[in-house]
Structures are given as C-alpha cells and as structure tokens.
Length: 389
Ligand SMILES: Cc1cc2nc3c(=O)[nH]c(=O)nc-3n(C[C@H](O)[C@H](O)[C@H](O)COP(=O)(O)O)c2cc1C
Image (cartoon, rainbow, N blue to C red; front, side, top):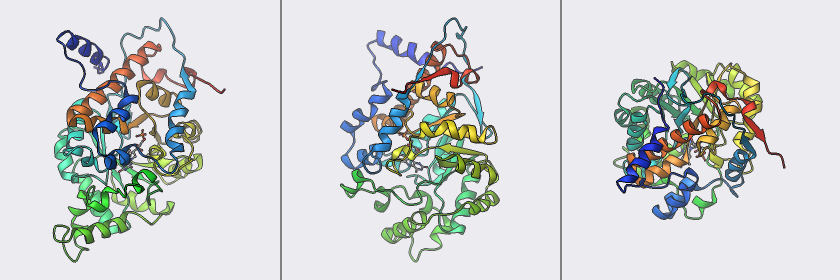
C-alpha cells in the first residue's frame, strides 16, 4: 500500500478544532527566518550561510522559480503512489535526508533525533562523516530505518577502510562520496564570527571513535583534544583526489556508491565510466563555489548525458513539494532535503524534524495530485513550463 502523506493536512485541521496549531510554521520557505530567532549567531550562520557573496545560494532558489508546473485536470489522480527505488533502496517517496554534519550545534540530540524521526517516517537518512555522534550510535537510533553513509574521504587509506567497515557493519547500505568539499570554501558568515564547529571538537565523533584514527595519535582525543582535532582536520581537508582513486573505494565497499557534487555532464560520464551506481547533482547548497551554476540548471543536461546508466539524485534548494516535482520532472530519481529539516531540528528535536518532513511529503503528495499526476512516472519535461523573461 502506498503511503498517504497528504493526510497530514487533515490531521492539522482536525487538531485545530481542539485549539491545537502546528508547533511551528508549515511554510518550508519561512523556516530560515524562524530559526534565526532561535539559534545563536554562530550555529545559525553555519547552517544558513553560503560561500562568498551567497550568489549560488540565491541562484538555487531562483532556478526553481523559473520553472512552473502546468496542472492537468480530470486526470483521476485521487489515489497516488510516490514510491520509487534508488540505489537498491525502496523509498516510500522520492525524498531522503541530505548528509548534514555537526547537528548538535542546533540541538543536543542532533543526529540521534534526526535518525529516529527519519526511521519513523520511512525516509532514509544519509549520515555525514562530520556527525556529532558515532556511526554505531546513529545506527542504533535508526533502528530498522534505512540508512546510507556519506564519506568525506580521509587522506589516509587505513582510516578510510576502517570507517567504511564500520558503516557496513552498522547497516548502512549505500555510500555517498562527497567530492566538492575536499577543502572548505571562503564562507564569510563563519569567518566573521571565527566559527568553525570542527576545531571546537564538534562533528568529530566518527574519527574520535575510530580505532585506525586513534592508533595514529600520541595521546587519545580524551587526553589531548586539540591535537586530535588538528590531526583530523588535516586528514579530511586540504588534499584533492583524482578519478583513478575511485577503484579503491569500490574495492572496500560492497554496496552501491554515488558521487555527490556533480555539476558537469562530463563528470557525470566519468562517474559512469568509473563504474559508479549513482550521482548527486549538487552544489552543496551554495556553500562551496560562490558563483557556481544552480544545481537545478545543471540537472537536465546531466540527466540526459547519463540516461539510466546511473541513478541521478538531486539537492540544493529543495524546499517544497513543488520543488521535488520540478527536480523529478527535470531528470532526478529522488531528492535530498537539506536545510529545512535542520531548522526543524533546531525548533523541536525529533518532533521538529518530523513536522518538517511530514509537511514536505504532504505538500508533495497533494501538489502531485492537484497537478494531475498519480505517480512519479507521470512526470517529465512536459510537466513544466520554463519562464525565460
Ligand atoms: C549545515 C550544513 C551542513 C552540511 N554538512 C554536509 C556534510 O557533512 N556532508 C555533505 O556531503 N554535505 C553537507 N551539507 C550539504 C548538504 O548535504 C546538501 O548538499 C545541501 O544542504 C543542499 O542545499 P539546501 O540545504 O539549500 O537544499 C551540509 C549542508 C548544511 C546546510
């Protein structure tokens, strides 16, 4: 039975009869402004901020605004099915949680709360290497929930292998390798506050609990945190890699692998040639290359270049159900949702993540039906009109 996500709407209205209103806004585009009131300037700037002038953060949203859905009527769209399968994982809807690091800067339960909310709703979570909790702790919080692992690829093969083995043991089924953050971009909102969670020892739970990493240290992270932090920062930033190195990951990871941060059709083709299973078209939410092309503008040519040889995922700027429909119509199989649920986490831990996710899924379900579509297979370029002026 396909899930009926749209029922969250009637649930909210019925609760209103008892004087209960939603815990915070149901407008996913208003969450950032609401979170600004809640969070300290450092964590808020870290989540909301982008690289340089913020041009790519803005471009991501502008690109969505240029595409408009053209609804069809009398399409018998009462019953809808949002299911799909991506990288071997069956999804109730084409939505996963993007890998987001250092979640404890917005809520003490961080990734544990997120994992639990995602598992309850059957939405897979992609755990970041920059997690505030260990691979094993988040796996436990996920229970039976589907989980993928995102690798920030360390410059040390033993540590890489150790982390991959831990992820496999922890039940993470697919690997997402993020390529666009081999070093941090120039991020004025963080620089102006001298705020970087990692050098404060936040977001280092995975290396600090890793036997191969600990074996490299003269003193444990518990005894000498600063030296451990420094070692890790040098190990996961500062060195770019090359396409021939992907064979190493293939050798040490049994499941499907997707490359995250692809924006050029030629890189998408190289991913296919390297035997990858998927790509994530993404500009990291405008946090890396200021002035980079909007991810949605890059999507159609990339989807065309790879066809069905790899699964195409998408992120950067997805806020609403309509945005999900637009990304799928332009060639994505599923999207990763980023900042909106992080703001939900800030508002109310697990319940906050749940509220945001249920909202986006309900909006997606209703908008899909109201535009005359019953399943994702109905969507395509014909679903949209591009506004060029
Ligand atoms: C606070 C924050 C932390 C992030 N941490 C990671 C990370 O650890 N690994 C990763 O691959 N991407 C990370 N990303 C990028 C997201 O996975 C995703 O690409 C981005 O959030 C999409 O943009 P959007 O949130 O504007 O939709 C992070 C993004 C934010 C906002």
